[in-house]
Image (cartoon, rainbow, N blue to C red; front, side):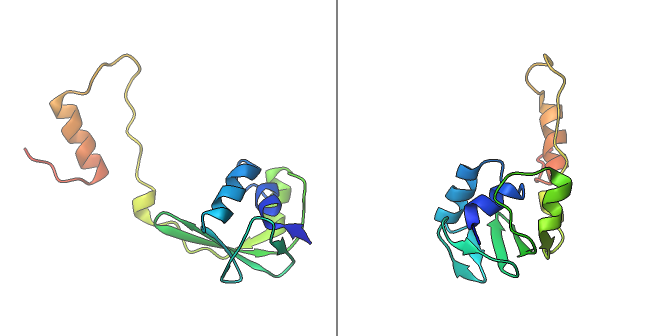
Length: 121
């Protein structure tokens, strides 16, 4: 068995172990549909649910690891049962050239259109 926060960090679902611990403490992580603490023991076959803003991800534990490994090995330790990422979370990011200064009113309206916000012309 392995600690839940360590497993989440080891399979690269979180960048740091403290981020995984905070997510568990904040109630964003559930194990087999039950709220958990970071030290909860996880075993093969468990379902880990992770609530993110606008999206719920679900993973099935297939292998236990306690050391952080490379991404190709990490994806072999779980099966992702998550639904597809909602389109509104995959919006393009507006980028401006460095040193271009503040956006003009025309630029701001174009950014609002890109983000799907109503534009007052």
